[in-house]
Structure formats: structure tokens, C-alpha cells
Amino acid sequence: MKIPKFYDLMTPVLRVLENLGGTAPFEIIAEEIVESLEIPKEEACSLYKSCGAGATKIEHNVAYAAKYLCSYGVIEKVEPNVWTLTDKYEPGMVVTHENILDAAKERLMVRSKFGCGV
Image (cartoon, rainbow, N blue to C red; front, side, top):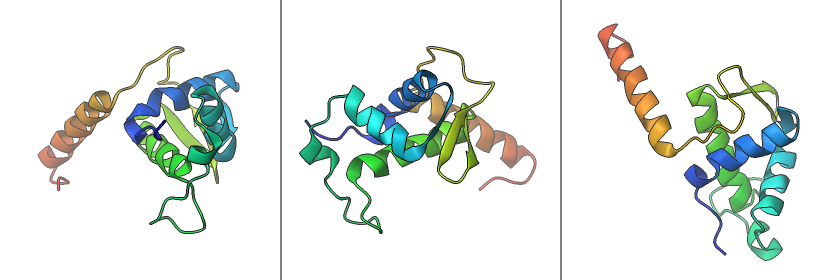
């Protein structure tokens, strides 16, 4: 099994946070995803070349999923390496990369109307 792409991990990140009571450290989220998706240990432990400090591919992809979920507003970082669900999150919610891209485009359009666009 290949490591899922970050956009395929967005809903699993939400499910893990929901199952853990809404708040959890990044390391626990990554471990729970490996377990719930039944990612073989040798795959889960493979290192991501361009990440410093020995980050694994799964950690890298989970971090990116969390970053996008944060920009979408359904999770937020409450302290270093600890994520929590926000009020925007609805139990059982499914988030796709299309949802996030659409939301990002909307934000960019609003920002450009006010002279803040890229």
C-alpha cells in the first residue's frame, strides 16, 4: 500500500480528531491514521527526503492535510503540535480537496476586491 496523498487524509484526520474527543497531539493523529488505514509499518516509517528531522512520509502528508483543514476552518492549532476541531466542523463531515480549493478561491476573490489579492 502506498502512503495516501495529503488530500486523501483530510477526512481521516477529522475522523481521528472526532474519535479522540475533538483535540489531539499531531503524533497521536498520525499514529491513529496509520492504524485506521492499516498502513504497513515499513511504509509508515519510510522517511520523506526533503523533510528535516527525520519526518516520515505519513507525518508529512498528515501535516499538509491538517494545514489545509486549518485554512478551511474546521480545525485549529491550540498549542504547538496540538489540533482541535472548530465550531465549523460538523460530526461525520467529509472534506475533499475540491471543497478546500473552492473555499480558497472564494477567499482570494474577496481579498482581491479589497486590494489584498495576490
